[in-house]
Image (cartoon, rainbow, N blue to C red; front, side, top):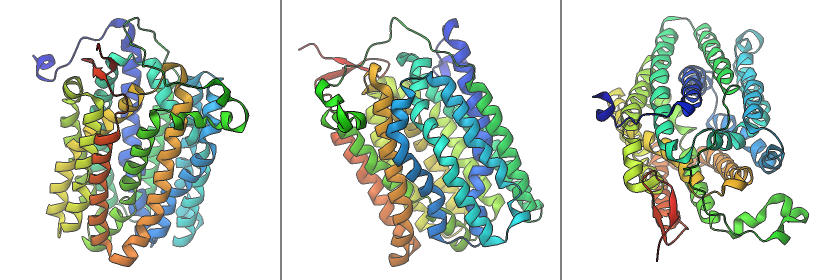
Length: 432
C-alpha cells in the first residue's frame, strides 16, 4: 500500500547496496548541513560579520574551484573516481573540526577571518568532490534509477536535516554563546565523517538496459595543445547552452545567500530556535515534494522539472523581503521547500541526460566551473546590490532574476532538438 501511495518501485538486488550507501551518505550529510553548515552564516552574523565577509565564505571556495576544476576533471579521468571522491570528502571535512576551537583562540573579527581562511583551504579538496561526485553517482546508479535515488536522497536528507536543525536551534537557545555553537560544530563534524565513511564502499554497476546518451560531436584536432587541455570543444557543442543556463541560475541562486542571514537576524530579529524551525519546515516540505519526484520526472522529464522549479524558487527571496515577522518566515519556508525538492532532485540528472557517458569528468568539470563562477559573482555582487538599494529591494531583484533564469532554462536548456523522452526521464532519438 505504501509502495503504491509513494510510487516506490522494487529495486533489483544488485543495486540495493549502492542505493543504501548513498542514502546513508546523504543522511549523515544532512546532520552536518542541519547543524554546522546551517548555522555558520548566522554565527558569523552574530560575531558582527559584514555582508562582504559572509559573501567571502562562499566566494573563496568558488575561486579555488574555478582555478582547479578543469585540471581536476583531467586528473579524475585517470583514477578510480569513487575512492578519490571519498578521500576528498575526508580531507575537506577535517576543516569542520577546526571551527570548534576558534572561540578559544580569537576575538570576534579574528574568528570571522579564520572561518574565511578555512573556507579557502577546504576549497581545494572540495573541488575534487564537486567535480567527481556526479560522475561517481552516474556509474553507481543506472540512468533509469537516478530519479528514484535522487528523490530518496532528498527524503533522507530532509529527515536528518530537520532533526539536526531543530536540535541545534534548541541547543543554541539554551547554551550560552559561543559554547552552543562549538557543540553544534562538533555534531556537524561527526556527521561529516560518518557520511564520508559510506562513500568508500560504493561500487560501479553496469546495466544492459541503460541507454547511452548521444555523444556530442568532438573534433579530434581540438584535443591537442592548451585548448585541448581546457576542453574548449565542449563550448562548441550542445552542452554550451546548458552551461550558460546553469550559470545564470547559480548566479541568481547564490546572490541571495549572503543576504538571508542579514535579513533574518537584523530585520526580522529571529532567534536561533526560530531559524531552526523555519529551516526544518523548509526541509519537511522538501521531503514531501521529493516523494513525487520520481513520478513527475517520468511524466515531464528532468529538464522541465528543473526549469520550472528554478523559476518558482523566486518566491523565497521575494516572500522574505515582504515578511515582517516570524510567521511570514515560516510560511515561505513551508512553501518553498517542496519547490527546492524538485530542483535539487532533478537538476543533476538533467545534466547527466545531456552528457556523453564516455566524457563525464570533462563535462562535469566545466559545469563546476560555471557553478562556482555563479557562486563567486553572486556572493560578491549581492552585498554591493544591498548597499545601493537596501536589503528588501535587493531580495526582490534577486527573486526576479531567479524567475528569468528558470524561463531561460525552459527556452534554451534542451539543446537536443528532435529527441523524445523515455519513461525514466532519459532521452532517445525520435523516429522521424
